[in-house]
Structure formats: C-alpha cells, structure tokens
Length: 304
Length: 240
Image (cartoon, rainbow over all chains, first blue to last red; front, side, top):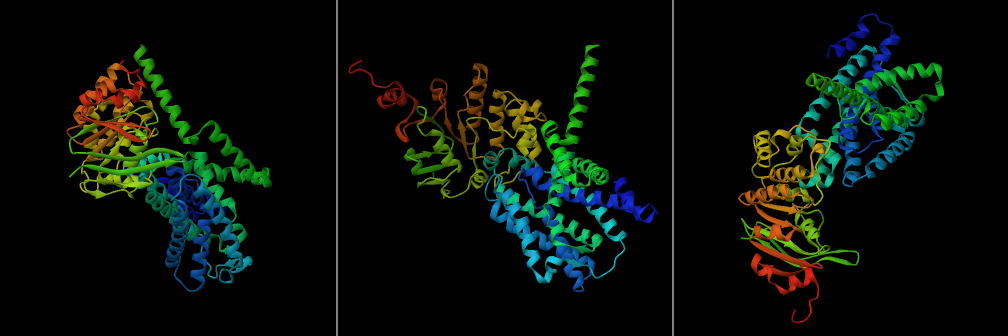
C-alpha cells in the first residue's frame, strides 16, 4: 500500500523521467498480469488475448476522446467495449472444456489485428493519435492506482468462496459440477471481470502513449507479457505478479541494451525454467522454502 | 411421492448398451444397494442420475420434478449429491476449502457454512485435518471426506459409488457406521462390490447385469435369488 502511494507520487517528486517510466510500466504490466491471474491463474483456462483486450480499451478510449468525450467517460467506454468483446469470446468458447478457450483467444487476437487495420474509423493500418495533449502524470497516477486496486481485488477474490470455486474448477470440473458449481457461468463472469480490468488499463495506457498502431497494440507480445508476469512471479497469489512485473521490466531494460532483439526469447526461456523447476513461480517457491525451514527449525526444537 | 423415479433409462457408448432400459425408484429414507458384476452398468446409471451425462432415452424424476435434462450442477443444488468411485478431492485446496466450495441447495442456503463444514468434518472424524491440503489425506480419510463434502449440499439423495473400495477392515467398519448415520439425513443409493458387508445395511437391493436389472428385493430375497447366484457364480450343474 505504501509502495503504491510512493509510486503514484513519483512524477511530482522531480525524480527522473526514466525512473518514472519504469515504474509506470511495472504498474501497467502488473494490472494486466493481475487480470490474467484472476482468469487463467485461478481457473486454469489460459488466455492469449489479454494484450489484445487492453488494445480494445486503448482504441475505444482514444476514439472517444477524439470525438469530444471527457476522459472519464472514454475510460468507461474502453471498459465496456472490452467487457463486451470478452463476453463474445467467453460465451462461445467457455462452454467447452480444455483448450477451446485458448485457441479462441489466439484467433481473436489475430482477427482483431486484421479487423482494426481495415477499419477506417479506427485509423486503419496507419493507426490513430490522441488529439488532446495530456500531462503524463495523469496516466501515471491512474495506472498505479489501477494496479494497486487490481492486486487488492485479486487477493480478495482469492480468499472468497468464489476464489475457492474457481480453483475447484481448475482442479476438477466434473467434481466441481457435482458440488453445485455452475462452471460455465462462473468462468464467463470472471473472464468478463478480468477483461474489464484489461480495458481500463489499456485505456489509461492510451493516454500515456498517445498514439496507437495496430501492429504494436494488437501484437501478441503484450499478451505474452500479461501471462509471463504471473507465471514468473507465481500464479494463484496476489504477490506473484508484483514480483513478476518488477522482474520483467528490470530484465527488459537490461536486455534492451545487452541483447535488443532477444528480449522475448529470454523471457520465454525464463518462463520455461520457472514452470519446469519452480512450478508455482518465485513467490510459491519462496513460500515453500520458508515453510520447510520453519518445520526444520521446529523439528530441531523438539529434538532438543 | 418417490424421492427418485428413473424410468426406461438407456445409455449407449458406441455399440455397448451400458444401461439398457432400467427402472429404479428410491423412497425417502430408504437405503438402496446397487450390485452386479463389473461392467453391469452401475456407475453409468449413477452418472445418469447425477447428470454427468444425459440418457439416450428415459426420464428421471426427483421429488416429482423432471430433471432428465438438468445439468449436473443444477441437480446437485436440488439435492442430488454423490461421491466418486476413485476419490476426487480438489487436491490444491484444504479440506475446509473443499467443503466451502460447495454451492448449497437452492432453497435454503446456509448462513453459517464454516460452522456447518466443521460440524460435518467432526461427524466423519476429520475435524483436526480441516486445514490440511486435501492431497495429504489417506484414501480412507478421503473416502469419508467425500461423504462430508457431499453432505454440504444438504442432499435429499446421496449416491455413494463404491464407498468401501480400497479400505482396510478398520476403515470399512468406520465407513459402514457413517453410512448408517447418513440414512437419517438423506435417501441413499450405494454401489458396492463388497456384497457381504454392504447388503445387510440395505433396505432393498437391486442387482444389475449387462445394463439390465435382473433382480430386486430385500437382502434376504436377493441372497436366494437364482438369477443373482447365476450372475455371480455362473452356470451351476443341474441339481447341484
């Protein structure tokens, strides 16, 4: 909480723009990572569209502002557009079990890129630019608040009976149905909530970058970052994506200087190593280590 | 009105008639044993009643309502609870969380789910394991845990799929006592291979073979039924 307050106040303290930007990106990827964690981390249904969902929020917000809408309303439009898109994906593919949803999100990601490039209202292949000039402190503060709220929301959901039911679906969907859980409905609802969060973060991000190009907004890269952040840090925990986002942004900075073209390759390797050797991410592994140490100490005490 | 009334149920898997025209009724407060050799269609019948899949033909009435096309989760909320032949706990969750995941019946949701859960865990002798991960329990414990999880639904019909399979003698004795006590809360249908232990508990027994009911009646009638003896022991020489 204190960390979030400090991070939000950064642009007003005279700290360098460089550091401010790094903190901003940690917040952006944390918001997306937490959204992914809520859907895919808790239900096990892997989404490859969280970056594209944020892209919808970004486009909706810019198009609304350029047509004279106030910023708050534009962000709401972004959330609404994203939630609607997720409903379309969810209702069609979450009735089925297994990988149907994952493929649907991948197709959706590609379809969106093709569609937006052909859409004159969205600026077509050339993209679109925010016609209002805003101070970057506005998206900075909003994004840090969104990321903090997303983290708190995740922790609350995880502890609630809804969170337990989502994990039950992840564990065994037949057994979940046998204890009265309406898995289809619950999956769709949580996917919509997760997407709405992406839409909000995407809308705010549009205020930050000010110009949108379909190739970069709807590239699969952002979707991969959204899943890399919780996978590296630890899914199913609120803290995991925080660790993952900081680590990812730090790593990207180093790699952009050391090996500019390889940064996603190395992130991919990192995910592979974490999932192979740590399974539950850095936070999960750290917790296990702590627990083992505690039982070891307790055993020593009783031995004495 | 019967608690459960299944009429003319049929289910085919490819060319195999797993359930081939079955009528079963269960009255409130009754404990019905479902027996038969492997492959007789007992578990298929369970899955049809619980809604894991739909029958090709026939109807299922529960408390008078036609639930034939209701999905499994709705039947669970209406009060049809089940356990699984191979235990299926949510292994990543604690025992307590497993019970709290249950969506209680549509009519009367409990206001104190935590207290209910602890009470049920006490009833099945697992109160002290409430906060352990489900994956850390022994098979005997998991079998009793599944009964507790099913009872969280406040069921009116409980389906027990081989509750004694894989249990030691001590654990079996515990489970049999548990089933006796469950009878007061719900009608029970039990599939069990251990006829010797399970049959004395039953008010009525139904014997299946190759997807059909070949005998039903009281335990005493079942023991002396020639069709049952034939199904279990094969042909006996004339006059033997």
